[in-house]
Image (cartoon, rainbow, N blue to C red; front, top):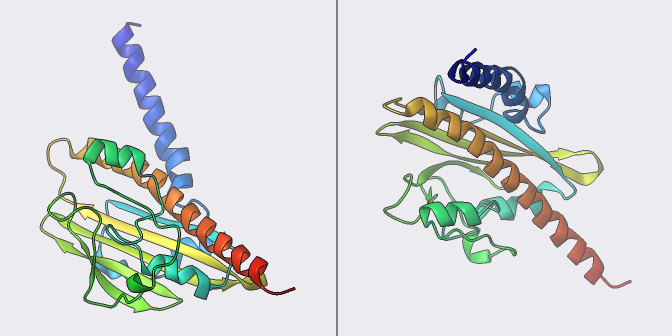
Length: 217
């Protein structure tokens, strides 16, 4: 067997392994089976998505203490609590992540827009569709080349904590190189979203510990 044939077989085996094993794990990272199939606001924004994922974490803080971090999300606001070094180096996005709650960024409402990148660069802002403080934030809408939606859903969990469930749905026209971009987006979104969910959890739990330690004994 020649080197080219061997390389093609290896690539095919890797692709099959990714589709059958790795992808089903990462598109449902942290989410229960019930959370994966639960209907959420924003699902109707993107029908027949090319990419869709439901991921979740448990936060040792009540929903009311997790919500402020979600309310201030966005470029030029609290950031996305995710990786910044590589996106900033590759795309010059100027991403920064807040480590405290900013009262001036808490008033988010339907009709607002959350920027993902500097104005005039990168994807367009995502319209705010649904806001239920302490419970739900839905972003998304139609674009010239497709549609996207994000849903942050907060559910009380045992022990006074929170289940933070995050669902994304995306569709765009597949042009030249579209399959390559689809694969890169599929993997890249997992890396960034996982870091974001962990970043929200870390900040909410740290803020709770700080408040607890400052209370009089």
